[in-house]
Picture 1: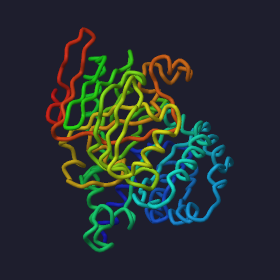
Picture 2: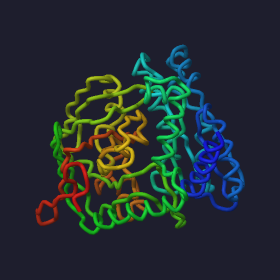
Picture 3: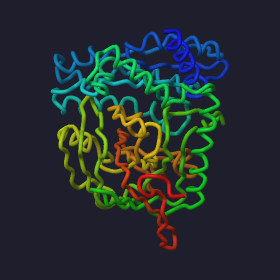
Picture 4: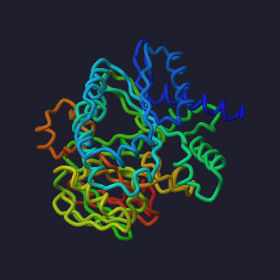
Length: 410
């Protein structure tokens, strides 16, 4: 028990100092599920110790969410509490940092009408669009971490008792986010430097296309002129570093919204909207999904693709080696924060302005003209495998290996 407490203290410290990198006199906003309350208290203490002016905590109860979907009228899913949306916008405008604990029950909304879920996702996405734009452009520092819940642990470890499942999930998280190392903060600085080397190489190359080849996948993705690869730590507009995702093993950039062609196959389940979508394929033509299949969650995938005009286009391409801590664990987490960092992945929907040179200074129209996708959604899905090869096509048409048999080729 004493060792667990020490690990939790280190994890909270890492989230505050490396995740959001809270500064003297800054406000921190924490979004968390109710089962994480004990850990959130440690976050709050660490934030004040690091100099935070104020820590505002927002708790969510998944059971209440389920009750609402079961019993509320349809109109309830067409209105969002705008006082909350405006409050989040105001805190972002005033320089707050945002730490979210993402630990969803993968089957929370199993059996719920997918149209009701889609209705709410669109309502919330519209209401929070301006707030989320601060995150997408790194105008506010933000970070996403996870802690175990009973429901999530049971999905990852279905064959053991609840207490043991939670303990095993904690152990996995501690290893993957480097809490088990003597100095996790130093380990993260070193990890960020390793990812930075990959970013530098790819930015110097400025490939015009990426070509993906694997079982069930034959996909070509065009990249915009002056695209920017990112990975590991980010830098806000004030020059302060932070880590948006913990864990992270990816380097990522922006695809051209009109330049995706071919078919891609998923390799891990996608937890979206409280449901699991599994073994699905997407077929693209000139950037748009024109056909799709799914062995599980077909209706949920259909609602995601039909969210808005941009939800059938890609907003992100991300490279993750098959030999990485999460993949090596052999676990499927049913949590995109973890599963996307075990696998090459793509994202449907909104593109990050930071993935274009001077993109954060561009208008939405200018971003669109240069190939950036716009949408209310940004949903990552996993496509990597041990047999995946990826090639970069140079401006003069030369094809160079980036990934070979699932891992870096340079």
